[in-house]
Image (cartoon, rainbow, N blue to C red; front, side, top):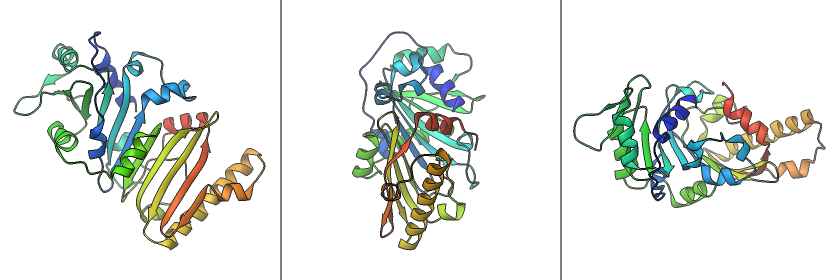
Length: 282
Protein backbone atom coordinates (compact mmCIF):
# COMPACT_ATOMS: atom_id res chain seq x y z
CA UNK A 1 0.00 0.00 0.00
CA UNK A 2 2.84 2.40 0.77
CA UNK A 3 4.39 1.66 -2.64
CA UNK A 4 1.06 2.34 -4.35
CA UNK A 5 0.71 5.71 -2.61
CA UNK A 6 4.27 6.60 -3.59
CA UNK A 7 3.53 5.68 -7.19
CA UNK A 8 0.46 7.86 -7.29
CA UNK A 9 2.28 10.74 -5.61
CA UNK A 10 4.92 10.68 -8.34
CA UNK A 11 2.41 10.76 -11.17
CA UNK A 12 -0.01 13.28 -9.74
CA UNK A 13 2.46 15.89 -8.43
CA UNK A 14 2.02 17.79 -11.68
CA UNK A 15 0.77 21.08 -13.10
CA UNK A 16 -2.81 22.21 -13.67
CA UNK A 17 -3.42 20.81 -17.15
CA UNK A 18 -6.68 18.95 -16.52
CA UNK A 19 -8.45 16.72 -19.03
CA UNK A 20 -11.77 14.93 -19.18
CA UNK A 21 -12.09 11.78 -17.11
CA UNK A 22 -11.82 8.73 -19.36
CA UNK A 23 -13.44 5.27 -19.47
CA UNK A 24 -12.61 2.50 -17.02
CA UNK A 25 -12.96 -0.47 -19.40
CA UNK A 26 -9.46 -1.76 -18.51
CA UNK A 27 -11.07 -3.12 -15.33
CA UNK A 28 -13.10 -5.56 -17.44
CA UNK A 29 -9.90 -7.08 -18.86
CA UNK A 30 -8.31 -7.78 -15.49
CA UNK A 31 -8.26 -11.13 -13.73
CA UNK A 32 -7.50 -14.77 -14.36
CA UNK A 33 -7.05 -17.91 -12.28
CA UNK A 34 -5.53 -17.09 -8.89
CA UNK A 35 -5.48 -13.33 -9.52
CA UNK A 36 -7.36 -10.79 -7.42
CA UNK A 37 -9.05 -7.81 -9.05
CA UNK A 38 -9.66 -4.84 -6.76
CA UNK A 39 -11.35 -1.58 -7.67
CA UNK A 40 -12.01 1.51 -5.55
CA UNK A 41 -14.51 4.16 -6.63
CA UNK A 42 -12.58 7.07 -5.16
CA UNK A 43 -15.13 9.66 -6.27
CA UNK A 44 -18.02 7.85 -4.51
CA UNK A 45 -15.90 7.11 -1.43
CA UNK A 46 -15.18 10.84 -1.10
CA UNK A 47 -18.93 11.51 -1.15
CA UNK A 48 -19.80 8.75 1.34
CA UNK A 49 -19.68 8.53 5.09
CA UNK A 50 -16.32 6.78 4.72
CA UNK A 51 -14.59 9.88 3.36
CA UNK A 52 -12.59 10.25 6.59
CA UNK A 53 -10.72 7.04 5.72
CA UNK A 54 -9.18 8.69 2.66
CA UNK A 55 -6.10 10.91 2.88
CA UNK A 56 -6.96 14.53 2.29
CA UNK A 57 -4.53 15.63 -0.40
CA UNK A 58 -4.26 16.61 -4.06
CA UNK A 59 -3.81 13.02 -5.15
CA UNK A 60 -7.32 12.03 -4.14
CA UNK A 61 -8.78 15.25 -5.52
CA UNK A 62 -7.65 14.25 -9.00
CA UNK A 63 -8.57 10.57 -8.89
CA UNK A 64 -11.90 8.95 -9.74
CA UNK A 65 -10.99 5.27 -9.55
CA UNK A 66 -8.08 2.92 -8.86
CA UNK A 67 -8.21 -0.65 -10.23
CA UNK A 68 -5.62 -3.34 -9.53
CA UNK A 69 -4.84 -6.84 -10.73
CA UNK A 70 -2.87 -8.65 -8.02
CA UNK A 71 -0.92 -11.88 -8.68
CA UNK A 72 0.26 -13.92 -5.65
CA UNK A 73 3.98 -14.58 -5.29
CA UNK A 74 3.32 -17.78 -3.30
CA UNK A 75 0.45 -19.90 -1.96
CA UNK A 76 1.06 -18.81 1.65
CA UNK A 77 -2.22 -17.93 3.38
CA UNK A 78 -3.08 -15.27 4.23
CA UNK A 79 -0.61 -13.60 1.85
CA UNK A 80 0.19 -9.97 2.72
CA UNK A 81 -0.75 -7.52 -0.04
CA UNK A 82 2.89 -6.38 -0.16
CA UNK A 83 3.79 -9.84 -1.52
CA UNK A 84 1.44 -9.73 -4.50
CA UNK A 85 2.74 -8.56 -7.87
CA UNK A 86 0.52 -5.83 -9.25
CA UNK A 87 -0.63 -4.07 -12.38
CA UNK A 88 -3.28 -1.40 -12.39
CA UNK A 89 -4.82 1.79 -13.62
CA UNK A 90 -5.59 5.12 -11.99
CA UNK A 91 -8.38 7.10 -13.65
CA UNK A 92 -8.98 10.80 -13.16
CA UNK A 93 -7.90 14.27 -14.16
CA UNK A 94 -4.62 13.18 -15.71
CA UNK A 95 -2.79 14.22 -18.86
CA UNK A 96 -0.24 12.26 -20.86
CA UNK A 97 1.62 15.51 -21.62
CA UNK A 98 2.01 16.66 -18.03
CA UNK A 99 2.90 13.24 -16.62
CA UNK A 100 5.40 12.59 -19.42
CA UNK A 101 7.03 15.97 -18.87
CA UNK A 102 7.35 15.29 -15.16
CA UNK A 103 8.97 11.89 -15.69
CA UNK A 104 11.43 13.14 -18.28
CA UNK A 105 12.88 15.44 -15.62
CA UNK A 106 12.64 12.98 -12.73
CA UNK A 107 16.07 11.33 -12.21
CA UNK A 108 14.47 8.26 -10.61
CA UNK A 109 12.76 7.33 -13.89
CA UNK A 110 14.26 6.47 -17.26
CA UNK A 111 12.49 6.34 -20.61
CA UNK A 112 12.03 2.76 -21.78
CA UNK A 113 13.56 2.11 -25.18
CA UNK A 114 12.12 0.07 -28.01
CA UNK A 115 8.82 -0.13 -29.83
CA UNK A 116 5.45 0.12 -28.17
CA UNK A 117 3.70 2.71 -26.04
CA UNK A 118 5.82 5.29 -24.27
CA UNK A 119 6.53 4.49 -20.65
CA UNK A 120 9.11 4.98 -17.91
CA UNK A 121 10.92 2.67 -15.51
CA UNK A 122 12.00 3.09 -11.90
CA UNK A 123 14.27 0.14 -11.15
CA UNK A 124 14.58 0.95 -7.43
CA UNK A 125 10.81 0.70 -6.99
CA UNK A 126 10.48 -2.19 -9.45
CA UNK A 127 7.90 -0.10 -11.28
CA UNK A 128 7.03 0.71 -14.89
CA UNK A 129 4.37 3.28 -15.72
CA UNK A 130 3.01 5.60 -18.34
CA UNK A 131 -0.15 7.26 -19.64
CA UNK A 132 -1.60 5.21 -22.50
CA UNK A 133 -4.39 7.76 -22.96
CA UNK A 134 -5.45 10.99 -21.32
CA UNK A 135 -7.16 10.35 -18.02
CA UNK A 136 -5.49 6.99 -17.34
CA UNK A 137 -2.18 6.08 -15.69
CA UNK A 138 -1.06 2.48 -16.21
CA UNK A 139 1.47 1.08 -13.74
CA UNK A 140 2.91 -2.37 -13.09
CA UNK A 141 5.57 -4.22 -11.13
CA UNK A 142 5.98 -6.47 -14.16
CA UNK A 143 6.38 -5.92 -17.88
CA UNK A 144 4.67 -2.73 -19.04
CA UNK A 145 3.99 -3.94 -22.58
CA UNK A 146 2.33 -7.11 -21.25
CA UNK A 147 0.11 -5.05 -18.95
CA UNK A 148 -0.72 -2.63 -21.78
CA UNK A 149 -1.71 -5.47 -24.12
CA UNK A 150 -3.81 -7.16 -21.43
CA UNK A 151 -5.67 -4.06 -20.27
CA UNK A 152 -6.02 -2.04 -23.49
CA UNK A 153 -5.80 -4.42 -26.47
CA UNK A 154 -7.31 -7.71 -25.31
CA UNK A 155 -11.07 -8.36 -25.48
CA UNK A 156 -13.18 -7.93 -22.36
CA UNK A 157 -12.86 -11.05 -20.21
CA UNK A 158 -14.98 -10.17 -17.18
CA UNK A 159 -18.67 -10.96 -17.47
CA UNK A 160 -21.01 -8.00 -17.92
CA UNK A 161 -22.82 -8.80 -14.66
CA UNK A 162 -19.64 -8.83 -12.57
CA UNK A 163 -18.29 -5.70 -14.28
CA UNK A 164 -21.54 -3.84 -13.62
CA UNK A 165 -21.64 -4.97 -9.97
CA UNK A 166 -18.02 -3.96 -9.34
CA UNK A 167 -18.31 -0.53 -10.94
CA UNK A 168 -21.50 0.13 -8.98
CA UNK A 169 -19.89 -0.50 -5.58
CA UNK A 170 -17.73 1.76 -3.40
CA UNK A 171 -15.10 -0.97 -3.51
CA UNK A 172 -15.07 -4.49 -4.91
CA UNK A 173 -12.93 -7.63 -5.02
CA UNK A 174 -13.17 -10.40 -7.64
CA UNK A 175 -11.11 -13.60 -7.65
CA UNK A 176 -11.34 -16.73 -9.79
CA UNK A 177 -9.96 -20.04 -8.46
CA UNK A 178 -7.87 -18.49 -5.68
CA UNK A 179 -4.72 -20.28 -4.53
CA UNK A 180 -4.46 -17.87 -1.59
CA UNK A 181 -6.06 -14.67 -0.33
CA UNK A 182 -5.00 -11.55 1.53
CA UNK A 183 -6.71 -11.00 4.87
CA UNK A 184 -10.37 -10.15 4.13
CA UNK A 185 -11.71 -9.93 7.67
CA UNK A 186 -12.73 -13.59 7.98
CA UNK A 187 -10.56 -16.36 9.42
CA UNK A 188 -11.19 -18.95 6.73
CA UNK A 189 -9.03 -22.14 6.75
CA UNK A 190 -6.70 -22.59 3.79
CA UNK A 191 -8.30 -25.88 2.82
CA UNK A 192 -11.61 -24.04 2.38
CA UNK A 193 -9.95 -21.53 0.04
CA UNK A 194 -9.10 -24.42 -2.30
CA UNK A 195 -12.83 -25.17 -2.64
CA UNK A 196 -13.69 -21.69 -4.00
CA UNK A 197 -14.32 -21.39 -7.75
CA UNK A 198 -14.87 -17.63 -7.65
CA UNK A 199 -15.87 -14.83 -5.32
CA UNK A 200 -17.20 -11.31 -5.72
CA UNK A 201 -17.27 -8.99 -2.70
CA UNK A 202 -18.99 -5.61 -2.96
CA UNK A 203 -18.79 -2.81 -0.41
CA UNK A 204 -21.70 -0.39 -0.15
CA UNK A 205 -22.39 2.54 2.17
CA UNK A 206 -24.82 1.99 5.06
CA UNK A 207 -25.88 4.07 8.04
CA UNK A 208 -22.55 5.02 9.63
CA UNK A 209 -20.97 1.80 8.37
CA UNK A 210 -20.14 -0.20 5.28
CA UNK A 211 -22.35 -3.03 4.11
CA UNK A 212 -20.77 -6.06 2.48
CA UNK A 213 -22.57 -7.98 -0.26
CA UNK A 214 -21.34 -10.72 -2.52
CA UNK A 215 -21.40 -14.25 -3.83
CA UNK A 216 -18.94 -17.10 -3.37
CA UNK A 217 -19.21 -19.97 -5.84
CA UNK A 218 -17.91 -23.16 -4.25
CA UNK A 219 -16.99 -26.47 -5.89
CA UNK A 220 -20.00 -28.28 -4.40
CA UNK A 221 -23.11 -27.81 -2.28
CA UNK A 222 -21.34 -29.50 0.65
CA UNK A 223 -18.49 -26.97 0.61
CA UNK A 224 -20.99 -24.09 0.31
CA UNK A 225 -22.81 -25.43 3.38
CA UNK A 226 -19.51 -25.76 5.25
CA UNK A 227 -18.45 -22.19 4.45
CA UNK A 228 -21.89 -20.83 5.32
CA UNK A 229 -21.81 -22.56 8.73
CA UNK A 230 -18.29 -21.29 9.39
CA UNK A 231 -19.16 -17.68 8.54
CA UNK A 232 -22.34 -17.77 10.63
CA UNK A 233 -20.37 -19.08 13.62
CA UNK A 234 -17.72 -16.40 13.21
CA UNK A 235 -20.44 -13.74 13.06
CA UNK A 236 -22.13 -15.06 16.22
CA UNK A 237 -18.78 -15.03 18.04
CA UNK A 238 -18.19 -11.43 16.94
CA UNK A 239 -21.62 -10.32 18.18
CA UNK A 240 -21.09 -12.02 21.55
CA UNK A 241 -17.66 -10.41 21.96
CA UNK A 242 -19.18 -6.98 21.28
CA UNK A 243 -21.90 -7.50 23.88
CA UNK A 244 -24.68 -6.75 21.39
CA UNK A 245 -28.06 -8.50 21.43
CA UNK A 246 -27.94 -11.80 19.56
CA UNK A 247 -30.68 -12.00 16.91
CA UNK A 248 -30.12 -15.46 15.45
CA UNK A 249 -32.80 -15.13 12.75
CA UNK A 250 -31.41 -11.83 11.46
CA UNK A 251 -27.84 -13.10 11.57
CA UNK A 252 -28.70 -16.30 9.70
CA UNK A 253 -30.03 -14.19 6.82
CA UNK A 254 -26.66 -12.52 6.24
CA UNK A 255 -24.96 -15.72 5.05
CA UNK A 256 -27.12 -18.12 3.03
CA UNK A 257 -26.48 -20.71 0.35
CA UNK A 258 -28.34 -22.40 -2.46
CA UNK A 259 -26.64 -25.22 -4.27
CA UNK A 260 -22.94 -24.38 -4.53
CA UNK A 261 -23.44 -20.59 -4.26
CA UNK A 262 -23.06 -18.76 -0.95
CA UNK A 263 -24.61 -15.29 -0.76
CA UNK A 264 -23.57 -12.45 1.57
CA UNK A 265 -26.33 -9.92 2.22
CA UNK A 266 -25.62 -6.70 4.07
CA UNK A 267 -22.91 -7.77 6.52
CA UNK A 268 -22.07 -4.63 8.52
CA UNK A 269 -18.47 -3.43 8.78
CA UNK A 270 -17.64 -0.34 10.80
CA UNK A 271 -15.43 2.28 9.21
CA UNK A 272 -12.89 1.65 11.99
CA UNK A 273 -12.82 -2.10 11.25
CA UNK A 274 -12.23 -1.50 7.56
CA UNK A 275 -9.49 1.02 8.32
CA UNK A 276 -7.80 -1.52 10.61
CA UNK A 277 -8.15 -4.23 7.94
CA UNK A 278 -6.44 -2.03 5.34
CA UNK A 279 -3.43 -1.52 7.61
CA UNK A 280 -3.29 -5.05 9.03
CA UNK A 281 0.01 -6.88 8.59
CA UNK A 282 -1.17 -10.41 7.84
